[in-house]
Image 1: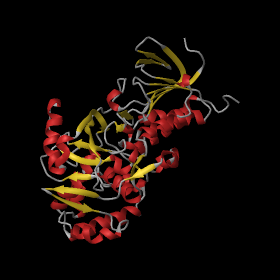
Image 2: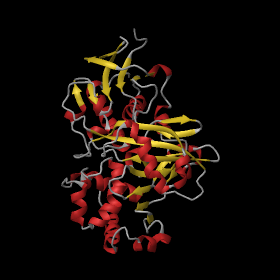
Image 3: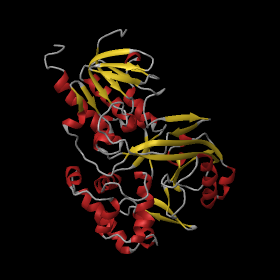
Image 4: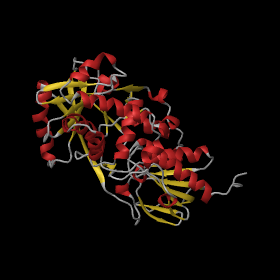
Length: 420
């Protein structure tokens, strides 16, 4: 038996579900947030192991996300940013590509790097300026192609696509073919250009913790999987029944619990975390692998961004893999170490802390949109859906979808005179 009347039951305590709960509470609604996991955050969680902070898969927050800026308190998160640009590994050499408008001292290093032609660097600058004056609505109304076709149409050389765009964006899109929507490419390129790629000082999980900070003990039910929804009543795996005036389903597409025509295709991710003696060489940019056919996608020295990620005297190395290449679980560490010694010869002695193999890390993103339709959001009379799979894969989209679901729920399931 439930102990008190519930206005809204929210299924799934990831970013979308937490945002929906926060917004519903701000509107004076009582909530119950139910999740099958042992903690909040969904894909955005951080584990503490031996004093190291391990995000569940390497991920960053783009500080220019417009909706995220409105929902989160950046100062409280104490964000630490990567330097713009990237360190590119090609063969046995390393090249720095930077944004000359934000890092002028690397202007000539960037222009003279053999990663691409001078024309490529100028086209990159032109694209940055063009998108600065392009609204998000315009970006998402533009004709949709693959990112690869888009880059070719703009005029970038094959060399620059292979040496910069593919290694950089494959780590974001979680696919090597650059088949992700050109709309999402433009959106993310604009976000990278106008803000920073950052992490909260104490891990990405602090984003989820901040969203959940106002939840009361009896408003959150963990370790309970919802197995059925009938009308406005949910049943959990342990047999508990809860009834509310409205329900919001905020699971990711892979765990969507109902027979609805929704794509469950997604992108997987694998991240390995290594403990190393403190790495003295500064490394405040993401290192990209431009060598084709290799398993490592990118490497980040997390304590160089935020010292809290590793105990004093240690470094935390995050290594993300190319999941498009077939690799058996038992081979993951062995193959990673084989390639890693070409980057860091001392890595043979590094200790493996954890492997995060995430089957569903992002929605498919081959076709994306900026706004959901009513048909996307309202599943039945008083049941609504939110999640980044409705729009485009990102924290920003997860929050946007939650806003859309709560607004529709308030309009359709609650009358204006209620609680007066």
